[in-house]
Length: 340
Image (cartoon, rainbow, N blue to C red):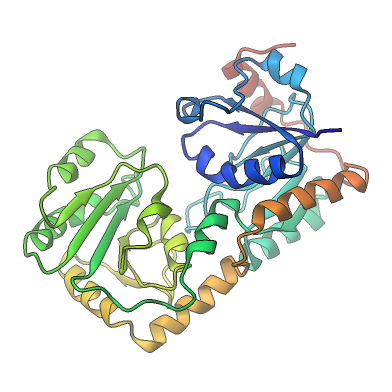
């Protein structure tokens, strides 16, 4: 008998994270439906099964609800599973329990240890280290050995959207100046929530040396890039898994795996250093990758499905009930206009 799964999302990035799980479920003979409480449905494929109402979700009666979101409707049927929408970039509330999930599928030891400590204390959720499904195809495409820096090198610039964390406005003049020299190729991509004025400024920089990308899946840009430049974004952790250097501006959690700067005039020298791939930096990048995502076999989606099966085989319950969460549940029902 087929198992019915539901993917729940409220942002366009949901699809890139869920696709490997979608393929793994169908390979096992299961059925998948999608439900969006926000943007994202418009990007689905023609053969995807979209549920438009909560009543349709109830009739679908999923075996499990899987989401990268921080919250999930508590009234949906099925085991509630979080896969996360990015790595811990030092922003607030990444390691934070909202009381909606039965099972957290963590990416690597750094997160797993922290979530396990909370699971042992609170006892109303289970934790399994599975790896992150968004990276499954990505890992299968990575070369076995790090390729040499291209000539000319390609610099990927990405910024988060929050004004307190973003370096986009500060570094804009430097990106503009350096892209006009012709020494390096540039690809610029900004967080989907970046304000439109900043987005327009960077998009207007397009020239023979700079391309502005609107891709929803930044992983597509990693293969050609020799260095990434960012600020405090979870995408930089994803890029570090290619074992190539990252330059950051005022990163909230700097470490030896990053070249972190605090002044715009240090931007160009930092990129030049990154392109030389100094030994101590490259060793730190490798160690960091092992701490956040040691699995490089492209089978995280399979492990997530196994974790769900194991959880249900053990009874599908945790030692303690989830907290009441009355205010959050009320707000969620209010947003979805569902009171049954």
